[in-house]
Length: 186
Image 1 (spheres, helix red, strand yellow):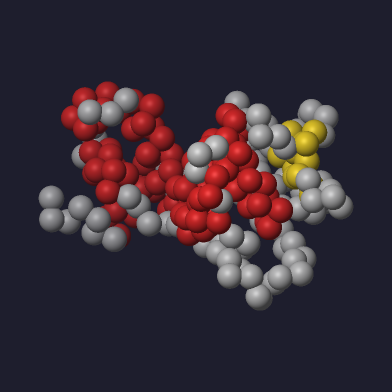
Image 2 (spheres, rainbow, N blue to C red):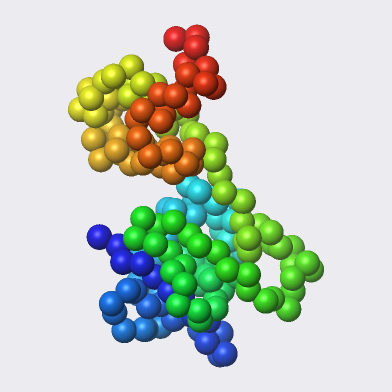
């Protein structure tokens, strides 16, 4: 399980990471599991920021580990750099952004794209397919079989849909789907 995290940008421009209950350490290129998970969250919930970071660091395409490290480090510097003992990323990978004073604020091409990024609440086609079957009362195993997915992927899609819609249960989703007439033509 993930621990809550506080980030800090040092005066030298390095990013330190402190997981709750652990000593502070520098974020390194070798933190591949953490970096990949971080990028997955960015791609799902902050796709504009993710795309901008991919564009900025595309010249490192040949060295994926370094490219991904630079992208995460930049995102952290632009959104979580303050040393304030407030949790920046909680154990569910929810981001709690901070206002980071930036000398390029308002001038940077990526102002309000990488810093202060827009949350993506749009459901993907895959998420809608899974949720339609959930809505119809199918079990995770039935959904997985029907859509040729793993049950892990089914659970992940449901969890991401709940987060995007700020809901916490299937009952809330049913109300949402009915209110929005999500599956009215079915």
